[in-house]
Length: 66
Image (cartoon, rainbow, N blue to C red; front, top):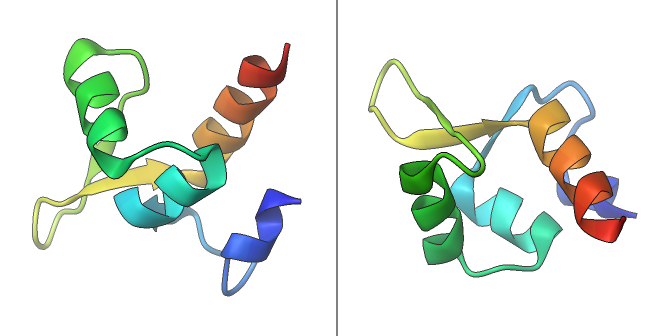
């Protein structure tokens, strides 16, 4: 199951790299999806990097399977 990617289950946000591994897509694909509004990322308030809400990634993965 894709939960194995998390160090702890309490992580609310994950990096582009972790999200891309869970969804089995290239990180650049996630960036494109974010730019196109397909799967929106949040922004880290400290460094402005993209981060993804774990719940959003889990829901998107479930939707991909359908």
